[in-house]
Each structure stands twice: as C-alpha cells, then as structure tokens.
Length: 132
Image 1 (cartoon, rainbow, N blue to C red):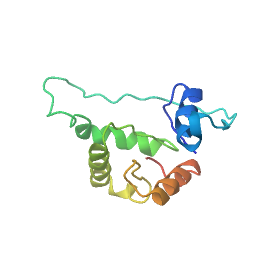
Image 2: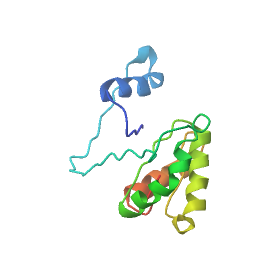
Image 3: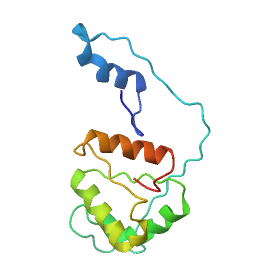
Image 4: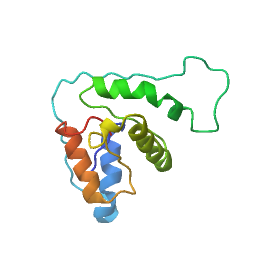
C-alpha cells in the first residue's frame, strides 16, 4: 500500500507503486479515499526581515520559535522538509525550543524502520501526535 499527502495524480502513482508486483506492469489495485471534510490551512512561516540568509537549508531552523505556536494551536500539523537530515535537525530543534512537545511530535522519513513509520502515521491519524 502507499500513502502520501502530496501526490497529484493518484492513478499514475498507483500504477507505479503496483507495477513491480505483476509481470508486464499490470496489476489490479484499488484507490481508497475517505469522504471526510477537513479544514486544511497552509501557513507559510517567513522571517520578519530578510536581509541575509544563513547557509543553505538553515533559514527554517531559525524560525522554529514561530512554528511552535502553530503546532500548539493545531490539532495536527505536518511539517514538510525536503531532506532526511534536515528533518532530523528540525525535530531536535523543536524539542530544544519546546521541550514540552516531547512525546507529542515525531519524525517520519523513509530511513526510519517501517514499524515505527506505521506507528507515527496511525498516531497522527488518531491525534495522539500534534506534529510530524
């Protein structure tokens, strides 16, 4: 099975995901979607002043103090970060800035053991976690 918060073409994604399972790239598969109304807010976080940038990728880390109140005010928050290393930096930074979030936030990327990734996904879905 596959899950993503950002896939644009679900049909193509399903075909690609299932192709290795059948000879000639054909496989019967089903798309399951929940018909649930959710309020989704995309909140860009930017510096108050943009004069100089820290070295590549570290601008966001300096804004952790602005991200914490968003996490606290939301039932669930997804932080999208483009590299595994930077996601690990963010996780540690958030715990440093807001140690009270320990146990309420988690890390999720492809290098984490599958069992833990599945737990994180379920815990986010059931709102046991505030942010991933």
